Length: 340
Ligand code: ISE
Image 1 (tube, rainbow, N blue to C red):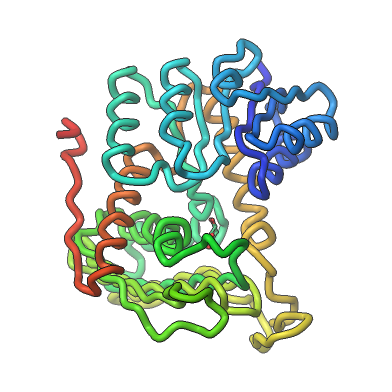
Image 2: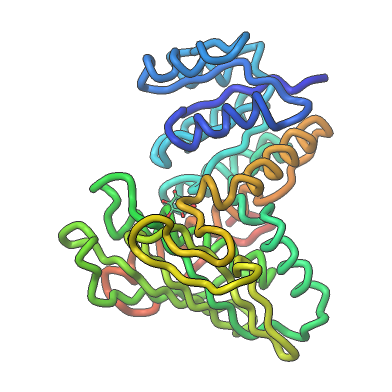
């Protein structure tokens, strides 16, 4: 029972996922792709045997030949596409963010609940990165005692387009740290405050970059986050946990002197600093996709669920309010059991 997969959205991420499905994931076959840029979709389909390009993404979801769907389109079309997957009873791996705001994420969550079957995995790939996964297991094991703090660093060399405004930094970049905090603590975030340091001259006019966000966890722990998407040098992502009896860092270079610099190579640590998230998290994406395919074939969902997608969207929504006011903003979630 090979899983026949359709991919919606074949920009940078979707094209990488298509390639992953063809070359690096066992038990699945890429059968269809869809993109508003139909020429781009057709060109991608033409690269592989037996892959069709379908103009209408909702027709791809409904297609009898498609067993399961990967959504790698922009966030503002996720709601409609995920709802279509639920209506068709198809498993879906949806890239983050699940939707654009908590109300729409809740509609998706409720639709899935009403359909009576968990179908949605949200693409928080860091949960599958070996170091992040190991850190989560270490914290959950209790070996280091209670977790007190996390310090997250998230730097991109630069962002792809000028539309990447301050809000996008919260919704598209910080959202990963939101999921990391919830994953590592196993708790919800109760408040968020986003600070706006004087921006780098490399950011577009009016864009707050870097940003520093502070989360308070339900158990009282605190998480500090630096997100800096025009850092100029390369991709640096790490998480340091501070617990009662020790500390641990995921994403730290393994050996050698760690430096970064403008120019090529962008620093070194006995190896080179990764240029971007596709390089840094390539293995995590492979593991995420393999886990999704395996779970789907068993009729299960692994990784981040629709609840995780909803909760992270709600935190980012509060984060956008805080970005505007500079003040801490409380996060309110519906009851997980009743969704009211
Ligand atoms: C992008 O959408 C991602 O998901 C990357 O992981 C993140 O590092 C980047 O800042 C986002 O734009």
